[in-house]
Image 1 (tube, rainbow, N blue to C red):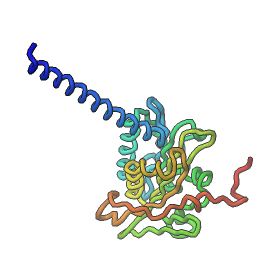
Image 2: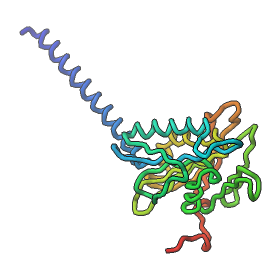
Image 3: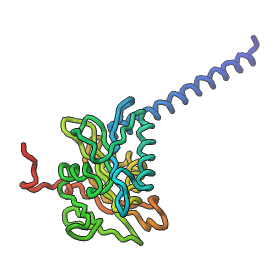
Length: 245
């Protein structure tokens, strides 16, 4: 075998080894990224999660229907769950009769159209209220002394929160928007920014953010800004609001 042929063979072997190492490194990076996503969302491979949907509101709305925008948000959540290799269980807000922590839960819609959302806010974020219009202006998010009022032509807001559950259980994610577009924007923001949120609050942390959806009539759910981090205000609980035990 000539020296030139030996050099060619050595070059081919070196190229094959380099390609294999590159593929292995890329595969390991993808796997680490996926494991971080699974850890933050509490979605192990083969696990299960609940997506709790609100009812459509408005004249003639059926109690078991959701809006078109909420359907879009559902599809994006389902894609995230599928990426993690988990299974989705879609449940109506008034049909969830179970506790917290056994499964990751995504709950969206305002408390006036989602009984489960109202329960989560009272339990985990007692410093936040979302008015429905019965006792004041409708669709107003109040966190401590901060008030976020809807402006139909310019901006709307959404509350995005992650609640840790007792004994290291699976987390609960809340997306409560002032409109269907705000719900959709909250889901999209969560999916796009989960790595940054995990770095800031930890993979098992609790947070509450108010997001501003800019000019939703023109831009839909695509232009979203962080209006305020209201975690501290949202978690404040008065003595009268504290649960027994």
